Image 1: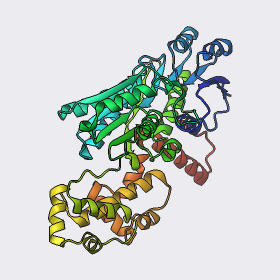
Image 2: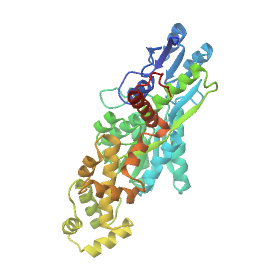
Image 3: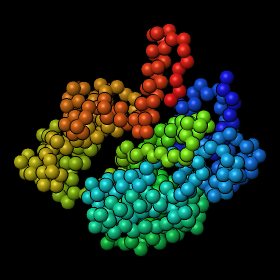
Amino acid sequence: MLHRQNIMLLIRLKPGYPQRILTGIRQYAIGFDHWIWQGVSPELKAVELINKRRPDGIIGTIRTPQIAQAIVRLKIPSVDVGGFLRNPPGGRVGADNIQVGAAAAEYFLNKQYRHFAFVGADNVYFSQQRYQGFAEVLQAHGHVVESLFVNAFHDFSSSQNQPVEWTGEIPKVRHWLKRLGHRQRPLAIFCSHDEYALAVLSTCRVLNLHVPDDIAVLGTDDNDLVCALANPPLSSVHYNVESIGYQAAKLLDQMLSGQVKRPQSLTVPPTAITVRESTDRLLISDSDVATAMRIIRSHINGRLRVTDIIHATNTSRRSLELKFKKHLGHGIHQEILRSRVELAKKLMRETDLPLKAISARAGFMDRNRMLLAFRAMTGMSPGVFRNQLGQVSSYTAELSGQRELQRDAIVNVATGSTARH
């Protein structure tokens, strides 16, 4: 029988990032009856509770040096999943924040933006890293990055869709956006996380700046609730948050058992940009191509044909094909297929629908046609793509392995104990 261990979770019980972290922790710790959970909000008062309860191990958001020092004094294993501090005690599991910033930059470059900016917190390590990745890619392409840093971090909890700690910062954001002026529009703004992006959106509304035509806004963490309820809906960099929780629980387990004796830092790469209306702007100077692209986007899940687009734009097929190749580098039919494949990828990321249903929703005549188009556009099959979505930091692979062990145990009527990864 395993010795009981008190595990403290320094995680707020709220939707979004914390809930997804807890989901990953739960996935790893299924069947761990010897772990006794204690939930504590990661504020300064956590220091008192850590000293009083003296847990065997900690997983959570280590926000302050005071909390870090309390953990060090007790000499207990800990795994940070917040990324607030440059050097947290114990281990760390989190997003690959430099790659998150780089992915945001590459996304905006592919959208043909020429003016860029960043909004983040200058006293938070993950924000600093995201800025670094964003700026390095853009500067390598010869671009200047405007930036606004605030010495704050917050909960997105006010009734006016603004972070409560930004009470004195909103005027600064307003002044900053005004200062950038018309010569730097359209402006592509990358924010260190979704809540800051939401504050930028609300400031744009106050200034009558149109999103995405004047300002494109991209967040990070892809919090479905926050992003979908934003006005307009917020695009965001997506990475596997559940995998962070899973790997953090695994790392703590290894530290408690003595398998891991030195602190480790594990990262989860970004997997996609979830595109919503806040960045969905067509930067195409030719009016016929822009009209055709709007038609493709609005009818992508239907039986759209090239002839439908020709008739709608009132131009010749040859003329429009030449314009597409000039502005996009490929023809009309290829753009229809590309858009359908992108929709199929989105459905695979966000749903558990079978491939047959996805092919229908994405506008393909049948599953086989989707398979051919998907492989041509991505170099892989839809099945391989879907598997890769869950394999960052081996999260899905490990769960799959557990399921295989369970099936083998049932088939073979095994009597031995199952392994814990």
